[in-house]
Image (tube, rainbow, N blue to C red; front, side, top):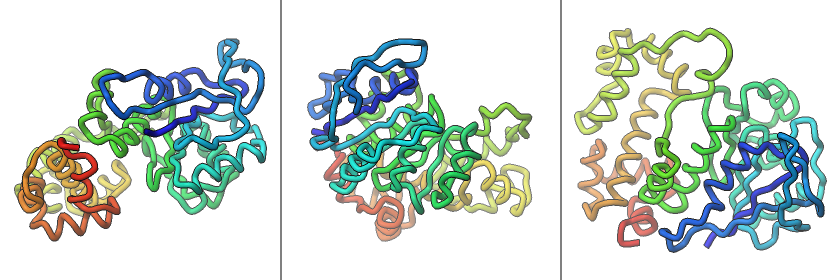
Length: 312
């Protein structure tokens, strides 16, 4: 069972806090191994939150005993207490998960855990974040980053996307999908922050979007990037440029990730052999599937099925 601490602080942002509570602290008796969660504070008194609301969280002096920390925002101009930073590092060093929502990336970066890692925050804080933390590999236009049990959500609603990604990794697709349905949202939402920035943006062509939708439905048909470019009525060069600008990855990498997503669903929900899963998800054979599992997921199909399969 995973023990979760949701951190509160002076001027806590209530929406981000609410997202964290909904994701990890809401009782879900339908799941046998759900999170045990406390909303905690390193202050020993009630805290004033946005809207002039007073919050009384569980006062703590340590994060010992917790396996995961959720940071639902943090004042960008507030220097964190060294004790708090030390507790975050200690939790991570013992193998814990640490995720931040919106401006919470400032606290996570101040701990040093994001140095050399991909990270993001709300677009309005991007310039300040880059200037303050040059060692962090800031990502411009994604909803969240999550790797090696460290994650950052770009903004308020993207907190739900990151939270679902964590639940999906820790509990599997079936449970993540049930949580998403209760939230009345997609279990996985594509796109980046650019759709929310208050500047005129070039609209993604319908043929480009339709091409991606078609590709997801036809992963087993031996799709080539040249064929996708033709279907989108674009030259290969323009298609590659458009793809990277829109998806922040190459078309080939995107195709591999879509195939992996399908393979994971098949491994979790069926008893098909690894070879059959490979062909049904668009890979040439089981060797290619295993290679991409190791490369992108640091796991294997068999290990994933053991952890998340329907007999688990």
